[in-house]
Image 1 (cartoon, rainbow, N blue to C red):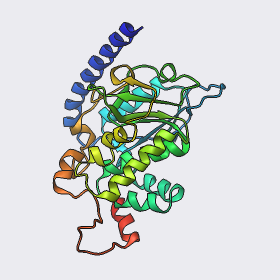
Image 2 (image 1 turned 180 degrees about the horizontal axis):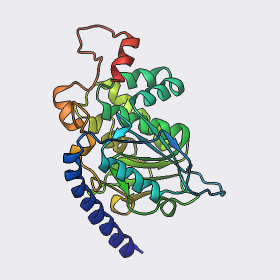
Image 3 (image 1 turned 90 degrees about the vertical axis):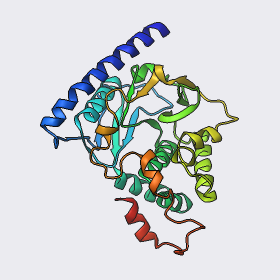
Image 4 (image 1 turned 120 degrees about the horizontal axis):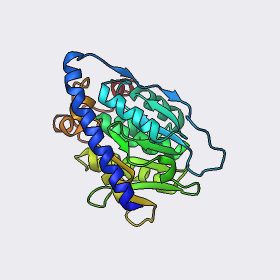
Length: 278
């Protein structure tokens, strides 16, 4: 079975990269062509058996109007998860969800994050902690049908990167999973300490790795579950984002709006929330 999955994975990668290559001339001819990601859509197939992990796929992006490669990536993931409903939130939707579900210290920490990728890192853990389901990055694609990856009794499925470290561009979990609660605590501690200088460690895989260092969890290598950068790349994903990818943005932008080192004094909460929705 592993050999079969590996071969199919290679076929997916080759096909996806070929489609990505074909999108360049299309983008040159139609540079402003954009496609709309729906905010919600039902499952294509319905299952009646009880499942610990709800069959809902969650995604977020700074806009729901995306380039052709991102849209093809979205369509492929929908075909690979026909038993899952789909939910999508822009930055504004993520903020409204957290404001309604996690008022208080969590909301305060969230609006203090200045870089969109950091807020997306935090949101994905919070939305799965509340509702459960499957989170997939916009540039990530499933490597095997989702229903075959997650059994009815699984409490979570995380992935290990090529260095065998837990990462967060794919997360599947039941609601109220204590592993996600520990990850939230890790992110909150990082934000409050103000010692991290990289999104990766502040809210991303580094924070998750620290939270789960002594925990046992269900995990699989990414090559058999979900991979990144096959259908799309940084050029297509950030075509309409003026600050580009977070790896570049954090070089010139502080990670937090408010910090102990700031001389500006406390920020107005309403103004802070507005600045995070831009």
